[in-house]
Image (cartoon, rainbow, N blue to C red; front, side):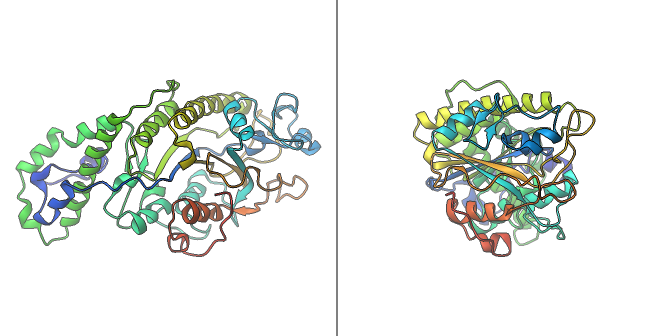
Length: 398
């Protein structure tokens, strides 16, 4: 009986039962979970290219209102972030975080020679490569290689498939939507049949041992994540939306002191070529309500100081609206940082310069890999230069 690739992937690289394990892997079964290290990073990917100018609005900039006569957010309805900027009116939970000193905004984040393709630009952001480089590993995956070998539960994507960002050379994170479903899949009939058809000992010193190792580590993590998720379930009132369910799962694992240091979630699509006002408002409502419950849960349990949420999108939108009530693919964008442990708060750098554009697009002022370097060096206590492949000057927001 040959293992089929689609069957292996179908269960998210799920491991086999102990009958499958070569002797040298038996120790994986009973691994002692590391004590929680404290800091947790939650990456929130806004798929499709969120319009940053209608997220953090330059409310005193006449060019913004001239170029967006139909879709600009009026100053009087925006949520004030001081005299120069306002927040989209739907994002009330973020406004509360801003007023509490628990939110920071980085404007004009991007990279040299930007690519306007969704797929290519997302690969660049997820791998942390230059625009001219094509890397097959992600920045979080390389963090796992460097810091968390043999521990897939250290990075979890709350989804059915694993993004490039969480794929390393030797280590990969885990993708799951529901810890219970992951646990039950690991003990499905497929693995029972596979165990009955194989004698693992004969593979002890062959390349297939790596497959056994991966499967063993993942089974161990599936069991661990499920047991942890039951220890202290989230109790806040989360919305019954995709992101609401994802953040509720993350909150339960954080409250249980799970050994996960990075969580990865996505929301979209923000590809608003048409009907931008309605589409962005709907998605922002989902994001706002889910984050409101998440922040409340973590605060009430004394965890908010140790959690950092970072939003990003593969690119922003063009400054001018199009003829369909939307905006087209742009370049630089803002990133929003939320957490009780921020060292710097508020607007961390100037708003985008709408007079100094690159063929109608914003010019980047902050390389996104500087943000990653900060998250790795200062928050996760990792070697950013080794993981990113070159040195980027970190910022000081944590």
